Image 1 (tube, rainbow, N blue to C red):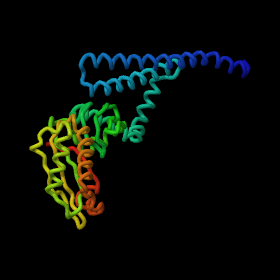
Image 2 (cartoon, helix red, strand yellow):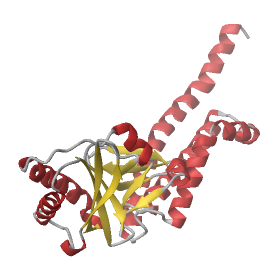
Image 3 (spheres, helix red, strand yellow):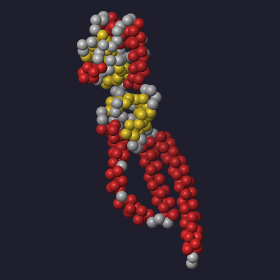
Image 4 (cartoon, rainbow, N blue to C red):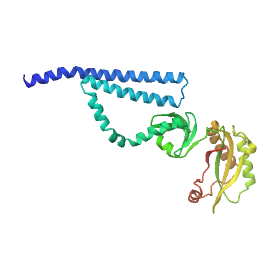
Length: 280
């Protein structure tokens, strides 16, 4: 048998298998996607925890794709037993190389078990704040007040401090206001209270707090605290900042005077109005 005949026989033997494998991959990936969508839909209809549903759907999708690849390998003629053995022998090296991803996966499982936050909760994590959009296999998606999607690795979320403003029905927002010395504090307090009264969703105006937070050589930092429902924090933050700023500037109150460097050393407050949520 000539060399050309050998190549021809080889091509005739393997090309159909390769074509079948390609078709099987295309159809298989499409079927897996559809099946995953059906599974996700049925889990939602069954009332399964909306935090757990995307995680399980993602896990099912990955497992089915691995199984499909093994089946296609058999179609081509690759011994899957040896393939699995090679995969197992390389698992340690792969695991070491992907230890960050594995840590994110493990942290995702911990989040779903212990539930430090759920989908829809308003959280502060890794310097970001917003509503939890989705808890995925490796990441948590957070929608910020600016309507940006922030992707927080699950391991980073679990290794840091998590502020969950939705765990309590009522929280207090904090507004830090830098002011210069020599101004009428009584007038400023009255202006701030009037501005907050015009701000919707503040729950108890008698519980408003206006206190000195920090001093330095050029000015001082005033802390303003107001109780709101956790679901209204973002809206109140925006409106309260705006109303206070307009009220003070129209009355000629001088903002600023609290130095950035000294503020950072004293507690990290910048010489501009800063708002954040605090548990009440």
